[in-house]
Structure formats: structure tokens, C-alpha cells
Image 1: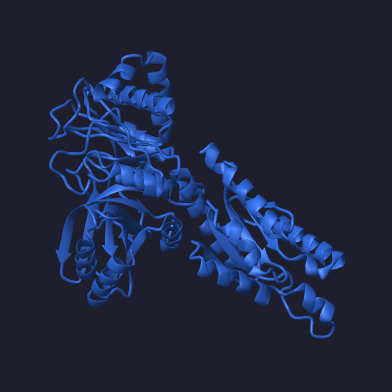
Image 2: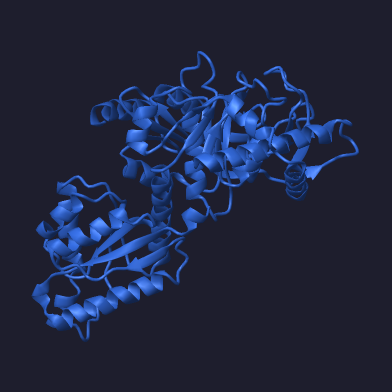
Length: 493
């Protein structure tokens, strides 16, 4: 994800000419020190210092520059002194990048023994930031507000979450999701308004016939297949002794598919894709291992032509880049309805990302009773226990809705000797009944983007940046309140 790693965030300090040269020199020195220290912290992206803005023209200029810089993923604004908000109106009215309003001050503590009026004139963040907050609220500017001292870990941790959400927002503005075939016939939730998706989120969703991919497959060399097989055997386990004699041949076919997919997506600039088991003309297998290995490297994917979920998987992977944990395409497959121990088993026919595995995944080859093709190779594993979330973006006709359920993934109490697919078992929050009823009331689909690397706050920030409705199902959710939230959101959006 080189393009993600190179993103940065601009630090813009507000003031005005009223204070004189000496005070403004100190404003510059203080803001430079903050930026230098932030860049030594654990923030996931570089912070770029920008000169203090003291006029409307200067604000417009720096925001125009930020808008057109492809590496600038957002701006962080802080008012060291008082910065009259009318100066900000022209600039904020053209802002096209995510905004973080950092309500902080240079000094951590009040210097009781030495504090004088010069100090007071210099350190006016307490009311300078409220002036800035007033105009962003008056203009209804999408933004995140973080209050606290810039050196504190909890403040930096929240900044990190916002930065990661902003990087996914920027990535989405140029995200291409290649559809090999259309969505599964007669299925409603995997369909949607692709024009609105591009207008609202930046996602481009072009269609490609499966023959386009087959042409690339026919050009894959044996050397490229060998190199990909070597990667498989390094990353994953393979029990050659107890596998059928044809297993390696079928694994090589997945390597061929993957090489073709990677080349095709690179040529069209796509970072996510979908397949459909109803559209495999010219292919020997449904892609399984190929899709799983590509997700492990950051590609978004979903089956059955579900381009919205493929985009969300990519979105979560961008947010979580470099973090412990993983993100994957997922489907609520079956329930465990034992009283007092109700659980959901998530899986799919083949394609769950190994980044969420509890152990080193095993490559296996088995018959697939759907699609009518050869036995596909796939990775088999159990999901990693711990806190996670499932998120689905849903086309509601007039808008997109993001539905999120916090879950607790658990160890499977027994093995699955006859289920040769990757699977994840979780307890939905706050309980099965509330979770399932709320999800269905919200119109959430059966496909989700699953992650144990990020938390709800990431998607709250993302929803704010994109202007997308967000419904969260978590501890404390009550159906009566949730119904009301849906009604209120219908009016608000």
C-alpha cells in the first residue's frame, strides 16, 4: 500500500496580525515544536507544518493547495491565539479534504507563579478554538473535534484513528472495484446505484466479462505460477502427504488465476474486485485461494458480485494498515441458538481472508457443490478470538446506510472435520436477539466487512467524512431506541 504510506496531514495554525511580530514568532516556534513532537510519536502518518495563517487570503491559499495535493489526506487546524472566524469562511467553503479541529494549547499547565498578560495574549486557544468551532458549526462543515493536550497519548491515539479513517476516505475517492460478471441473479442487497456510489463515495464500479480475465489467464507463465506457489507454501501450510494426488494441480490453477487477477487489476488501476459463481465461463475453478491471498495483501473482495462489500473490505484494510489484526469479506452463515450461548458462524464458500486466522492457514482442495466447476483450492482456518466488528454498507434507494455490529469472536468449542472452509464464530453485541432484530430492521445485508483490527470510532469518523448514515449495534442497544434512531435518521438524511 505504498500510496497509502506516503499520505500526510497538514498542520495549520490560526492567528491574526493584531498581536505583533514577537508574539507571532512565538506562535510559529510553538506550532513547529508541536509538529516535530507529533512526528516523533506513534501517529501513522507524517504531519506537515504550514506557516501560520493570519488573513482570509492566506487561509484560502493553503486550503486550495491542500485540496490539489494528492498526498495531503487532511488538515489539522489549531488556533494558538484568537483567529477571527470570518477570515475562515472563504477557505472553509472550498475545503475538500477531511478536517480535524484540534482543541489544544501549547502549554500543558497554567504557570501560576509567572503568568502575566503577555502569556495570556499568546495562549488564547481556549477561546480561539471556540471561535473556530462556531464557524465550522455555522457552516455545517464535516469535521472531527479532539480536545486535550497534544502530547497526551489518548489525544494522539484519537488523532491516529481519524488519520486512518481519512486515509480510507481519500483512497475511496479513486477506488476502482472491478466486477467480473454482474451480481448474483435476483439478489437485492448486492445490487445498488453505482452512479450514486461514485458521486457520494468516489467508488467506480466498472463491469468486465469473465472472458477478459480468461485472456489474462492464458498468458500467465509457468515461472510466474511457480513463484506464486512458493509464496503460498511460505505463507500457509500444505499437507501434501494426506492430500489427493491432483491437489497441487488445482493449487497451481489458483496461482494462475491470481497472477491474472493481479495483472488485470494493476492494468486498470483497481484495488478491489468481485467474482460470481454464476459466471465462470472459460474458467476451471471458482477463485478461492487466489482471492484469499490477494485480500491478505490489501485488496478488497466480495463474492457474488457484491461490489459494495468489496469496497468496504478495502476501506477497512486501508484504515487498519500496519495495525495488529485483520479484515475480511464475511457472511453470516448459520446460527447456534443454544439458550444462554447464542452465536453466529461467519464463513463463505471459499473466500475469507487469512489475516483474521488464529493459526497458520491450511491449503486444502475439496469439491464445491455450487458453480459446476473443478474442485477449488482454498485456505481453511478458524478465526482469531477477541473483539471485532461486522460492517455493511446498504443502498437504501435515496442514500447509503452503514450498519455496524460490535462482536466478540470466540474459539470454536469443537472442530469442524467436515467443513473445509475458513470460519469465524462470534457472539454479537449486546446479545443475539437484539443484534439480529436490529440488523434486520436496519436493512443490513448477509455480506459484511469483518475486522478485528479497528473499532467503531474509525467508522464513525469515516461516516462523518463521507456524510453517510451510521447505525451502530453494540452494548446498550435497545430495539425501541434503535427503531427511533432509524426514524430520526430517515428525516435527517
